[in-house]
Image (cartoon, rainbow, N blue to C red; front, side, top):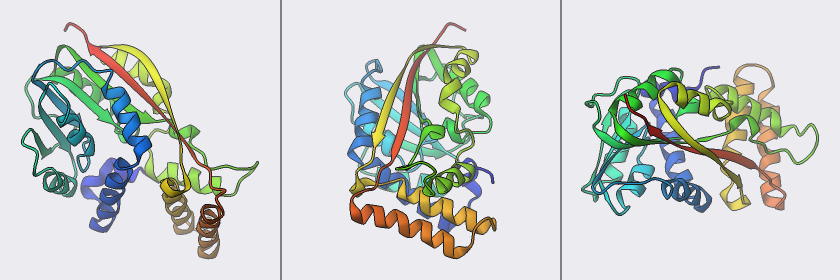
Length: 269
């Protein structure tokens, strides 16, 4: 099953609404905010910096960047017109942020026009990763910085025992939501091939609290994928979701969601 996020521009409006709500929900989780702030603090924003986020979704990362000292303008590019509509609506009180519909592999901006390019949980959903990185290299000024933050989806887990049945839902979620679950494991090679000079990779681990259990949604989605494909019955899919809820109610829920950040410099052309 293809990654639904890779073609959100053509997705069913109901699906887009679900993901828009999830993006805003995820952005409010304190642990997610802490990881974002951690890698943003490693960027050197020049005075009046011009920043581009590729794959900006509903705009929470752009809004955070716009509040930083030294940032002059933040532009978010996103292929989903509905995401862009929501982003502009939520960010209407900020005068240094704007959003536009666009494709990361064919950006509309001039060469050397940004100081920083951010890709926040984008590349693992992108089929044309080399094209997106090449465009980032083109629009970044010499010496500009690329910030990539993404999940190590292949290592994400909800297992609390050997052969945990809920892990089957996590596997199905990866099939239907992630283009490349191993993205972070070859990220250094990818950015180097695109002409960047990568700094060290930094790991970020997120162990979810029961009241912030974002990966419960993965169980619901994965169980739905398995049932839709005929691999399990609707009754079993419901049982998987019920088991996830039982663990939440009992305080035994566990999920681990690892992330990696990488800051790279745009070398001379």
